[in-house]
Length: 137
Length: 148
Image 1 (spheres, each protein chain N blue to C red):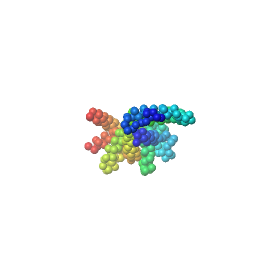
Image 2: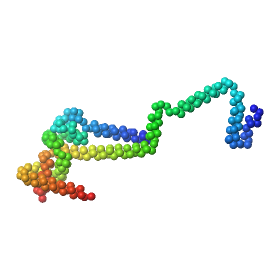
Image 3: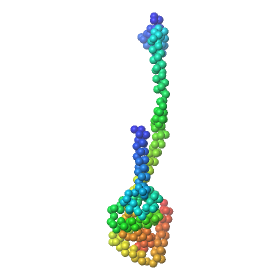
Image 4: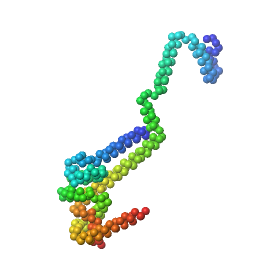
């Protein structure tokens, strides 16, 4: 380790590429002197890390649908469709409420008319209304 | 809050409202005893009546207990006739009822006698009055349709 390349002179503040090259050289030199047992442990640790990395990069089974849904929920097309759907739902609901109000008014008139002491025919017969108008003139 | 989180409760609430609206039009076999008694004149036609109209009849049945015995009898006697009128005839009758309700109290009290007088008119005259009224109605409708 007496090579001049093993010494890093930081007083000259060399750029990062130079430092990296020097570090690589030192590590390459040192790797030849690593004990066999240490090298084996390092190899096993590297394999394990690579296996973990590849398994986390692959989507797990069952998560695919959720991922697709999550992407779909945040897409612009979905947001626009949701807004249109919501407006349509509000319009239909408002219409139902108005219809219910109109129905309530009809029920009120119908029940009063059907229970009225004037015969039903008096309301059904067109001629009676016309005759009343004529009489009142 | 994402759009999905906001939309889902709205969707569920809406579907629930729709479901309630649908379940609010029961079949004859699903009616209560009192409802069946009141609506008995409609028993044969009930399941063919559209849901919105069934709701109206149920509304009438709900008001029935608050009526006097005379009113209850009158209503039951008229239910069948009323159900068989066309929607236009029912609308006309409602319009006449509203018009007569706007008359002064004394005039309305006299209506029963006036009806008796009208009933005693010759059939030809009643028919002519009815045809005149129909012509006027058609003219009014045409005029209101041509008005922008």
